[in-house]
Length: 251
Length: 281
Image 1: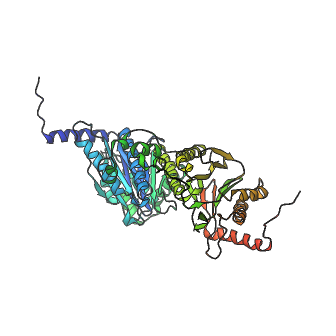
Image 2: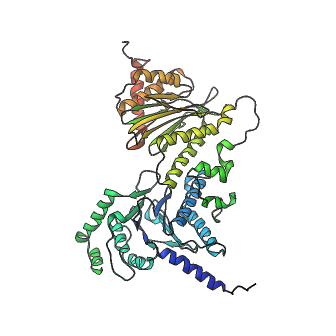
Image 3: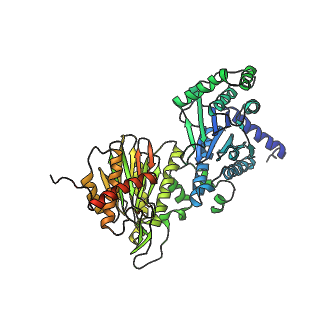
């Protein structure tokens, strides 16, 4: 019988992290931004049916980058968790923080158990509050850590470039059209700094809109409404304030 | 297993197992004791006293459907509650009104709403109206044991069928038997009187405003002859709950709107206690 090679725990974890990161990097990145009336999710997604963003509960949305079957599984688990919790207690007792914790525990356990393949996913769980101060955005990398984010967040392979671009330009209280335009600009940037065009039909956009009269605040933005918003966002560059004009010169 | 959903531990395997899009199926596998139908009843004699809700009426009109209910809950001879709500939105395009044991009915509605919402979130698409009506049937059937002990729940389900472009009404019996009703329907103890009124008032080309007026007239007639149905309570400002479902979705009339309808009916009934008359021929 041959003796197995010794692999240090550090090395084993580094290998697993490397494996998960590579898997996530194969997919497109996506961004989640706060705007005046809520939180907007923007990503490039050629599919109309297989969504990257979805509703978990009244005020809670979900976004994921990486391997579809794995994050879909987590999404449904989250919906079951939220619905069961709301049924057992009350709808107000379902929170993004609670959900993020459950996801973190789940991802963390899978990541550190040697018998299981680490999940190749990176998640964002967001909850829209009554006011912008009440908004919560949590980023959950593949290893089960939680990062509490403010303003903007990007996940996926190209996340670092995109989030540094967003960090410089995102402001509180942007309109939806402005936030959407910024998100599309950010997503169009490649690792090597070059830019490409993302046509509207390849964009998946959803919002958690606190001004919606319904209890459920999640809404997909598609078709004509998306086209209109992109136009408004585009038009504002020429007419709007000096801040924005500077922003467009940088490009 | 239970502790896991309440603490912040890892999601139990049942949560991550691919399976049905039904919340009830998930519950029956994961926590069957949470389903109302699985509750064990001790052997009992006689009928359990619990508040009962009474009359629910619905009527279709071109472009939608109206569902309404009175506000009284009774326990034997006692008025248990004067402002109970028995009509609820089920989702964006449907509503359910419930006659029968109030406690169970409200719980059933909560589970039914969740069932529809859960399906929508998991599948990314709404159930068909027929699918929703069938789901409600299953839930009533699971309550049969309690119905036999006198704790029956008899709903009326109304919705706008997006595929067919019209409002539809489904009525149920205690065994979960489901039948589609044409034009108008009523359930509960005052339903016989309400149905008589609707039969006389209904015609094919009602406007939305006429349909809402019609259901309140019918509820008034039910309250007139059935002691368990409450009429509009002007002194306490408690008026029937009237909901309208059209292409634009579910809408509940505001208190102002329903009070205006109820008051105009009351005013005319002061002149003519038996209400508007149809021509004999």
